[in-house]
Amino acid sequence: MPLSPAFSARLLPLLDDLVRTYGTPFHLYDAAGIVASHREVTEAFAGAGHRQYFAVKALPNPAVLALLRDAGSGLDCASGTELHLAERLGVRGDDLVFTSNNTALPEYHQALAAGAAITFDDRPFAERLDTLPHTVSFRVAPHGAAGSHLMGDAAGSKFGVPVDDLPAAYRSVRARGVTSFGLHGMSCANESSAERAAQAADDVLAVGAGLRDHGIDLDVVNVGGGLGIPYRPGEEPLDVRRWAGAVIASRDRWFPDRAPQLRTELGRIVTGPHGVLVTRVINRSRKHREVVGLDASMSALMRPALYGAYHHITLPSTDDRPLRAVDVVGGLCENMDKFAVNRHLPDPRPGDIALVHDTGAHGHAMGFTYNGRLRPAELLLTADGDVVEIRRAETFDDYVSTVRWSPASVLPAGVR
Ligand SMILES: Cc1ncc(COP(=O)(O)O)c(C=O)c1O
Image (cartoon, rainbow, N blue to C red; front, side, top):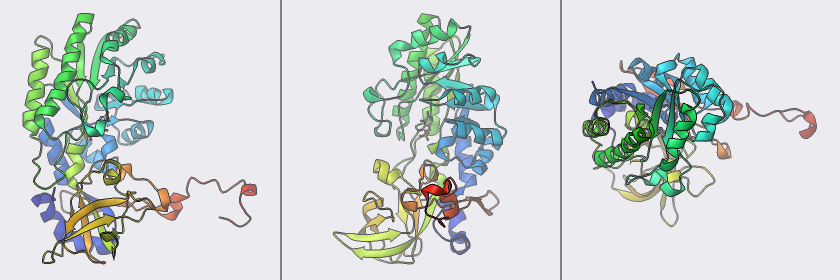
């Protein structure tokens, strides 16, 4: 959706200077908005025995993670690399969860050493470890009524333990002396309805309550991430209070005597609306349709190409021009490298600045370097109104930094 009025008011007066100083493209994140969204979640659960762990994969920049850490958020890591990031930030123990899938043993050892709460995606992963964490959680496979396009087909999901196999999974770790148990479940992604998201959590809590029949009393239920944001103008933001209230009510209904702690590992709803990709129009041509070329490509934002996802686009200084239907494309040698198809924009011309909205989650983080299109810089607009470069743009040297230029025998003499 269009940038929030508060974000616009903070960003637009700085835009010309930023473009002059940093060039384009770059992602910019709004610290005040990110902290406010984190607080909205934690305040909605206040007093209910809840902890939010920001899903590092959504925006793995240390400056943003530090901001969230300082606002009281834990971190949810999905890989050894993300655990390293958490370690660098001094986040460990109760402040850290490790929710991964198809994971190699060294990463579990790393998570154990950091004192993270671990969710096992299936029973064999726990069985391979000699030492188990104090609390063992399993992820339940997507099931129930909820579900979403981004999660894929529940029946074909690679994630989690099928519901019917859960009791045996817990029994296997209980036989090894584990006395504290958790359950993880996430069956929606970018879910825009508070009711459907709460239903997805209710499905998980119902499974958790059923485990009591097998002698498993849960200490923790993690209902994952997956809350949506309004990417399109006119869409309503999900009502976080209503969703949290319904999740708490579900938890208390399914667990009337002994309430497990509720955990969330939300990413998109915390940072998504508070990022923007600032680009410049570099081309305009007429083919089967009018084509507008940006100086960014899907290496900076993959969601439109990967999921056909809508990201709103505005051109801040072209208000009086007539609207034209255009395709907005990047420079990658892939026909899917389009930020928008048949979008009505105010007659974009080379030199115009174009803002791609809602890039604060699963944006830069999903970038890649195919075609030698390098990932752009990340800037942070601080609560004081300063702008700090928190990741520079990649360079050719970065691109080749992992290349082994020797043994020379495989390269012609003089190639460097
Ligand atoms: C296990 C897990 N937790 C949390 C998240 C964060 O989801 P979102 O950013 O949609 O809240 C994801 C997203 O892929 C995930 O796979």
